[in-house]
Length: 110
Ligand SMILES: [Zn+2]
Image (cartoon, rainbow, N blue to C red; front, side):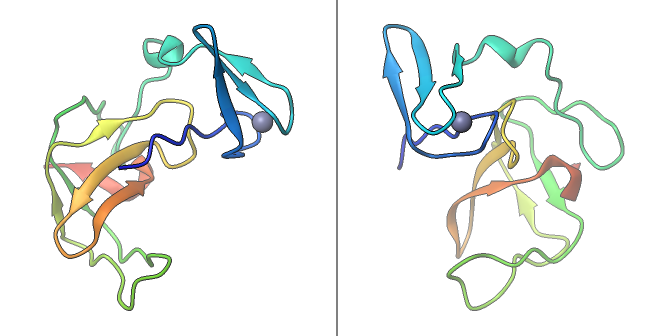
């Protein structure tokens, strides 16, 4: 599994750790990993708050880069991990696809 942390500002993956801060080498944004967890609630398509470990259902077909088929609407995803501040703010594993990042607006709480 990759530990790449995307810059919350410019979404660059060229980030590195410095002391307990993360630094973006593209826009020189600095932030503290996990610091935004409290203020950045992650809501599903219906505005329900999601938590780490929740199960969700994909509500529309989602094309997957590098995969021959999309993740189908109705696919159930277990044990999500939230990544506040990221564009794709849910980390998960989907059968047949492996590790994926999803947008919370395209799922609903199961
Ligand atoms: Zn950046």
